Image 1 (cartoon, helix red, strand yellow):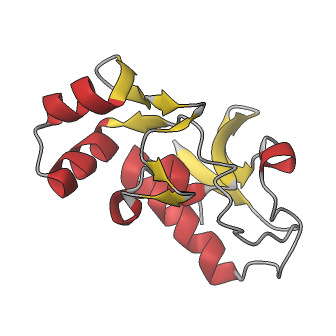
Image 2 (cartoon, rainbow, N blue to C red):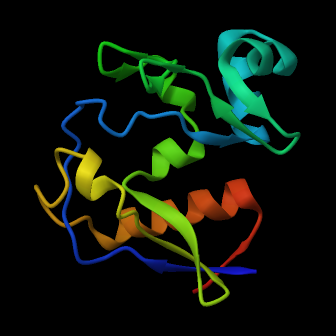
Length: 142
């Protein structure tokens, strides 16, 4: 499967408000990264920090509807934050049978910095596509 990129056309600027820090669905690779960062086993991270895990994907536990790792509107695991968090306000979505990296409409209501700031540059767009390719093991559409 190839991934296409449709990221242009809107500006955003992170306000560090924590509005996007809900309970993300994370991958096994994300869990392994968090485990290494925290010095815990994979199982310890699953048991302590995830509300569910099906063997492939998990969902973070929440505290008052926010990610368990959100502390004073800052991510306490920022260096190893999950893929979905790195991509925001973009997300991989299936459109007409193709995987497309695009703007996530959810952010219109939940991100205070959406449609503010400058348009991201092409290099930033490519970085997001490369992240999806790396984490999901798909070919990038060039």
